[in-house]
Each structure stands twice: as structure tokens, then as C-alpha cells.
Amino acid sequence: MARGKSETKASVRKNGAQQEKSKSLTTQAYDLLRAEIITCRLRPGAEIGEQELAERLAMSKTPVREALARLTLEGLVEAFPRRGYRVTAVTVKSVNDVFTVRKALEGVAGELAAARLTEEELDRIEALSDAQYVPDEEPTIAAFIKANNDFHAAIAEGARVPRLATLIGSYLEESTRLFHMGATIRDVNPETAADHARIVAGLRARDSDATREAIIQHTDNTRKGLLRALIADDESPLVL
Image 1: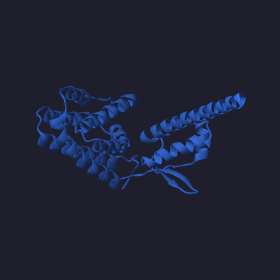
Image 2: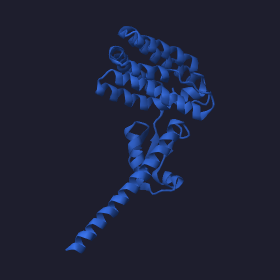
Image 3: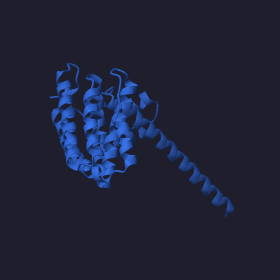
Image 4: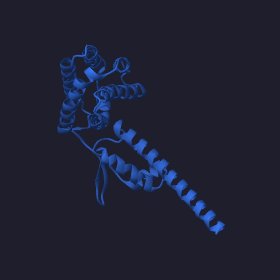
């Protein structure tokens, strides 16, 4: 009986180790593919297959398939039964749709946050608002985009409505690729700094109306600037 229990425990440990290894490989595949999609090394509209990706990443198809499933749920990849996958295209409509929803959600979040943020939270938001990057330098672009996402997420969290913060977080994730595309073809530093300063001023003054309007204006400025730059760029992956 003791031997049977020992063998059972060993089997459980083995299965657990295998699952953990599979999870780790899935995470690796997900992180690598997501980074390539966001930075457009895997360009919008590109067709990709499990076998091809598994060979390139030097792993089995299972973690690649699981990673692609996660990316599909995030809207970065489209799945086609028996055909494979395609990196989701970036269209004028998709850009307008994302920013229309963000404008509505983040405007409300800013209005609420102006009355509910602590001084410590305001200090962090102001520090994040100062992020800058060097055009054509990928590491600084990535750091800038992260700081920008953190800035908007911190305001959303300051609204003290968890469901609202979750929704905004999902749209920030979806916008990350758009931010990267915009930052690599135009210098958004001056525009972003000015817009963020107006938002912070509204928050500091505890002025809900001013904060909401500043966020709405910032969202529209970002959308218009992004579309103008993408339409003017001959190598843009944007689908008109």
C-alpha cells in the first residue's frame, strides 16, 4: 500500500512538472509573439501557422497553439479553422472604434478620479506624465508606451470602480500596438506632454469637468494624429 501511494505521489509530481513546463513554454511563446505583433515585426494582415511558428521558436506546436489562443482573445490575432491564423489588420474604422470607446470610458474615469485620488496617487500620475522617448530608439519607445499605459491605468484605478478600470485596461492593451505604430513614425513627445499636463492640472485642482474634457481632448488628439501619420506613411500597415 505504501509503495502504491509513493508511486501516485511521484506521478502527481511528474504531471505537475510537465504542466509547469508547458505553461512556461506557452508564456514564452506568448511573450515573443505578442512583442513581434505590437512592434509590427509581424505586420498586420500577415498569415501565420502553428508549424511555422513552432519551428521558428524551437518548441512544440502545443505551447504555440495556446499562445495563439490567448492572442486571439486579445484581438491581436484572428483564427481561421483549417487555414491557420492571421495578425489582425489595422483599419481606419478599428482605430476610430477603439478611441471612441476609450474616450467614453476614460472621460468618466477621469471625472471620478479627480475627486477620489490620494495625493500619493496624484504624485505617481504626474511622474508618469513626464515620460519621453527618443525617436527611432526601440527601448525608449517601449518604456514610453509602458509609462503612458500606466498613466492612463492609474487614473482609471483612481476612479474606484474596478469594472471600469478593467475595461479601460483591456482597451489600453489593444491600443499598445497603435501607440507603437504612431511613436515610430512621428514624434508624439510634445503633444503627449502638453495633453498629459492638462489632465494632471485638472486632477490636481479636483476639477472633474476639466479633467474629463482634458482626457476627451487628449484621446481625440491622439486618434487624429495617429491616423494622419499612418495615412501619410507610404509603408504604413493601415488598411484604408
